[in-house]
Image 1 (cartoon, one colour):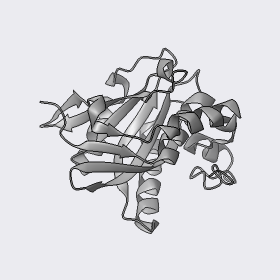
Image 2 (cartoon, rainbow, N blue to C red; image 1 turned 180 degrees about the horizontal axis):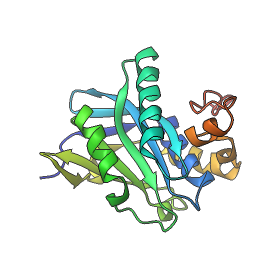
Image 3 (spheres, one colour; image 1 turned 60 degrees about the horizontal axis):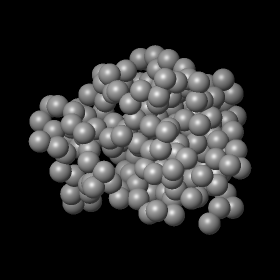
Image 4 (tube, helix red, strand yellow; image 1 turned 90 degrees about the vertical axis):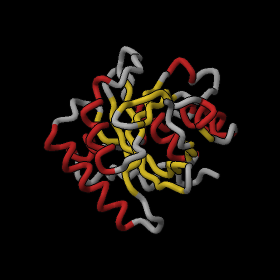
Length: 192
């Protein structure tokens, strides 16, 4: 049985996750998706870039605690609804992040894991392969369950072309320089 929930991605959440992966294309990348359940649809409204190095347990725990605090302070009711990841090899297997995904699912029953398939970016297609939690098992999310405005692909391509991925700050960057904000509040400043 496949996941029955639909997934709706805010354009900036999708773009930020893709830009994070583009910035660190030769490294394993991990980030969080924040959002909320709205009926049978999981609305992904924000991406939080976390790591482009190894996701060590203590740092991951601190990053998730800070993300949860950010969710509590947000205007909308947000929670961690999933993770995204990418590997330098381009593999979309979730094995490297399964333990993390299981922990997220323990706190949000409809959690999802999204693996970037960079080969879909040039064709302006949805570049993530999703897995959703169904009865203690991870099952593939069908493309018919993903909602994203088609203009998002053109805008994401534009941002990549402008090399805006260089402006993305993840938690690793923040740990190296505390003046850098891993929430990326100004990443889309001036964009429509």
